[in-house]
View 1 (cartoon, one colour):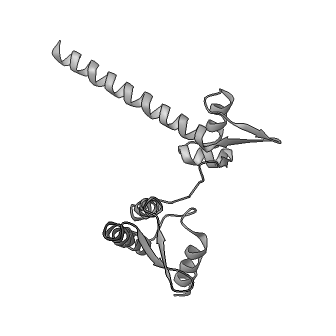
View 2: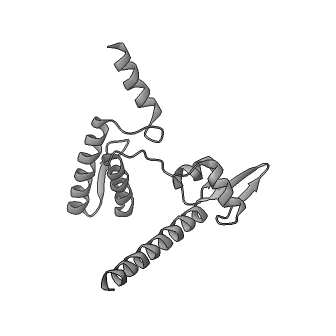
View 3: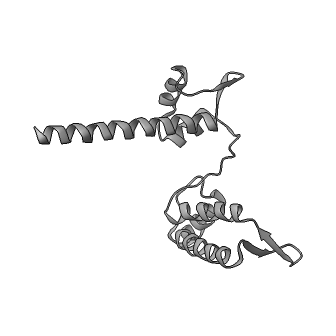
Length: 157
């Protein structure tokens, strides 16, 4: 019984950037996302109580970000918030691409992803990483369309 309580406490401290959400967190996120979406639709924004008990209105764009975050949690995903201007370590960048750090380092050396040297370390600007990811997805989509076209030609022959 104590081990379960210790695990729960560890999960609480660890946060969702380091582990998958629990079933209770997934359920909570799903309900919260729905409630926030309904509240925003009714009120044109989200209203919460401030530190002195007075109402605080959260802008719709911020509310949409909160709903998106909760959507990821409710899908059972680990979540990390990264500011657009962030400089990522090679490990963080590799994690975001779901590749190994050595593979990412190879991509950096090949010039496929822009990076900056900070002392002996490489840092990857988030926009450069996203640009690489989008370009890779675009090329994959083009390749899939070409395969489909070739398959149709083959079927007709």
